Image (cartoon, rainbow, N blue to C red; front, side, top):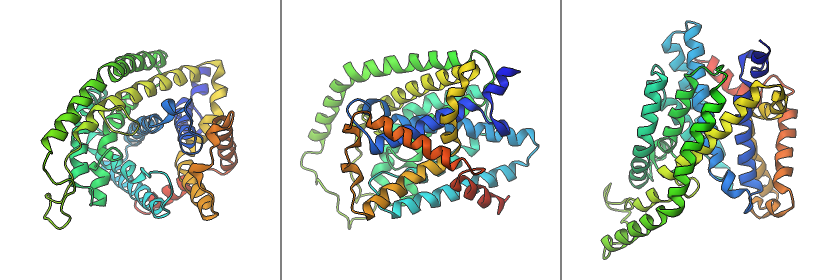
Length: 366
């Protein structure tokens, strides 16, 4: 009984899951404000994968909670659609600020819609679907990158490495984990072991085999496109006005590149982090997760805040990307401490401003 109390916060929230989400938010701030050669391999791209994995888990928990309460499935779908709309609008609002960071909220909102047909699936079927999508999504999103680059909504769904389709394998895997018994004592160890089994082979392949394959593919693309126009004709009819499909991106492990190898490396690492924090959350040391959990509960607010902060600094004539905080000794730790402090201050309210806005928007339709 005591263990259950340690694992859950008020309102039935899972302490470890909130902490992992908070860790992902910290990683985003470090990536945007204090990136350096020491932390880049750890946070670049991986923080978003960790966040999407947690989102998939929360998605299944939300659906399961609605089922247990006897909520009408139509009412649940309406709630999901309303949440998608407000997140999408927030994303386009941030894009209008024209800040220095890529905004993924529109793609994130599309994930909620794409996940609706999979709500009733079992954990086993979702895990199998996720494995299939790790290999299908990358080529499909590259085709989308070529065909839908000029169409905002379609690009958010399947238009490249930052589209919903690119993150779908991770999101579906999170849905599968959310279907499992998160109270199981051995869950942390299982997730850590699975993460290690995914990470090591994928990383070794990316280091020792992938460069040679990528070189051959790039040479093939150069030779096959010899004599072809380097730039498409913008006045030609679709799809003749689109760029060739960038197939070489399938054979890279660059951060936020959307390739199978980048996704597998980031997912393996994310599963290990999730497993370790679930293990910690069950023990007497669970209290050390509470500062991270506070940030995790305000993840949407904290995500939006970084863009507003960057925009405000740029209005004041300060280039965020040129501050060089990452080059300062312990600069990334200072940024992390500032994020934790901001989360503590914002947590004085019942919930964050964005979370409150989202719930009010939902109540207009549900």
